[in-house]
Image (cartoon, rainbow, N blue to C red):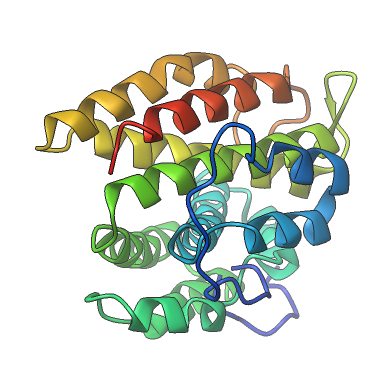
Amino acid sequence: MPSDRSPRPVVARRTVVAGAFAGFGLAASPVRLWADEGGEAGEGAAIAELPEAVGFLTTLGLFEAQHRIVAALYAQGAVTVAQEHLAGSHHAFYEDLEAGIAATAAPGFEGETLAFATAVTAGADAGAVEAAAAQVLAACAAVRKTTHDKDQMQAAEALLRVAASDLEAGMEGGQVSLAQEYRDAWGFATVAQLWLEDLAGDADATVAAAATSALRGKAEVEAQFAGVNATTAPGDAGALLAEAARVELAAFRLK
């Protein structure tokens, strides 16, 4: 059944497109912000510590992940779960991206986002939802590709750290105890890997080599999940943090 929540665009309800910082290094990496503070407040505090461009890209990644999660659930026939996930997401507000998008050379895509949310909420057929998701994901990619490679890599690191925190929060003894947290972790890790894979194919050999190096733990990260809608999974957040550390190191190669 369709959710009784009003359809809304699918990003964290906080402003992260403000304040410029120097790129974070090994000693200053905000690992413990996610590990210690936890939850939505912890995510917001951690993202707020990032440089402006990286913060925006991280928020874009959170936004993209929600579309991938909901689309994946819908494709599996878990329509009600998809609707509930969309309605309950705290990373689901297009307006939190608007300022960042306006600063890029890419066009806005509020209409596409609303079309996706409306299709999901209305219980549209799977083909319509898949097509609507493709439009939003293509728009997200267009925005990302206007940004610097190093910023993208650092945002991928941040996404992995958020994913690790959510995975830890969503698992208990190999059981999925908080499904929304587990699904978020799956989505954030998935987006991080996809961005790194894209960078691994970059025409710049230095960028490609750095991203390829960062992806060495990809299989181990994927092994911690059992699909987007699992009830049990290995769920070792340490594997995601290890990959985040590799991404952080690889990003130092880039200017």
